[in-house]
Image (tube, rainbow, N blue to C red; front, top):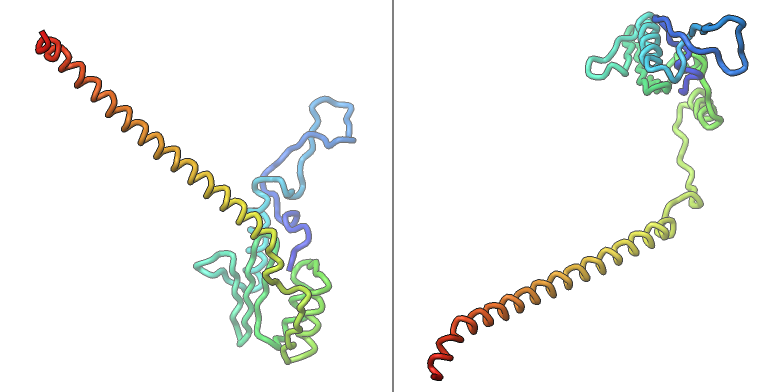
Length: 203
């Protein structure tokens, strides 16, 4: 269930003042307005909404699960209900055929439902049998669905391989060239060391 304007349901305990919105003016200087309810962009909006929701859940007999405070459980007189909260969405879990199905879907705050969810609710209320899945080949995924991904991945891999081979060849050439240069320099040094002896031997 998606709660309409969830953060506006939270109680604003502290005083929050704002500049006058565009389009409003005052004859007096320095006039501000005070927020009466929590708004979405307030830092404490989520906390205020959650505090209000938790208080309401406890009022109706739910208890918070110890390992996850976003899970509220009601288990009394063979009645089991579980509410899992995620920001402004609530997942309600209860046994099939529960007498609370209709009441929960219509009475827990104001719920914005899509046609699909309403259709699912109607099928759950009217029938005790699970509907068989309908094959929908048009919406199924196949190899052809990912051709763009294959092209991008293949192109990127090929470019990476070419760059790697080029860099490796460049490193090997540099290493070979450095070795040859070092050998040449060593030979020149040795020739320079023996040059005076050769000159002396000639004379």
